[in-house]
Image (tube, rainbow, N blue to C red; front, side, top):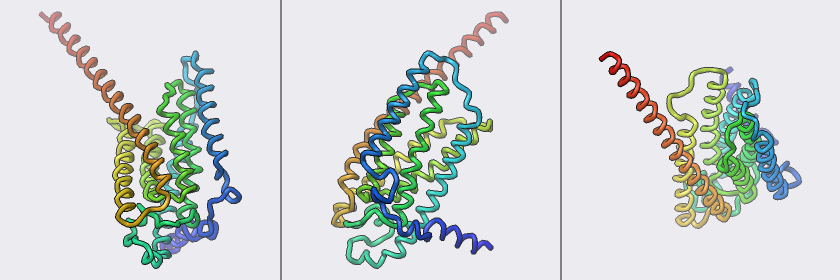
Length: 295
């Protein structure tokens, strides 16, 4: 029974003909053109900005009911499926293409995860899941509109981060960029945890005593930064990695996201520290008043 279940999962997530024969192309893949991704990102920015301006005078948040919780649960499950699918697909691709590595300088599976051999085309198992991951990025955009309807501040970082993540996912497929398999594994693993936590808190269960989501994002950015250095090292030591032009552009965008996020993180930390000090001062003042009354 258990073996049959594993075999079925493996078939549907890595051996199905639609996955094995996948090919990224404008004629076969929805959303695979430059005009589409540019229009989609522009529409997202315009819609979010317009909605925020329309509701700017409204102080009370709009009731959303269980919608955010359902969205978080769906995103957690989708991320878990993508993680499992690309993990099984990467293992299958390594098994099936290892013979070809003799013609390249790739010697270990980890090197393949970081550095695709030159001439790699966006087709097959791992690129199918990269495509599903690209499509799932659009579902993440709903969180922006949830935040606006709840009357939370619409920041440039939120718009920039979501827009750039969609564009980077597009570039991964368009140029068969190296490192994308490992990046998707790390991201979907963290997203499964983060969105599971958001669902947990959305249904009224207790939250962590520290900024859980922000710390997860810091871990993800740190892992990506280390892996980027690994790709660069392999590129020069192993005779080149595929899609390095897109990788360089993505590295610049990742650097911009990292700087903006660190600025946000430091600002949040200082705000929390300031509020803690104010509470402590209020407690000290209250205790002093009580002492004065006692005397």
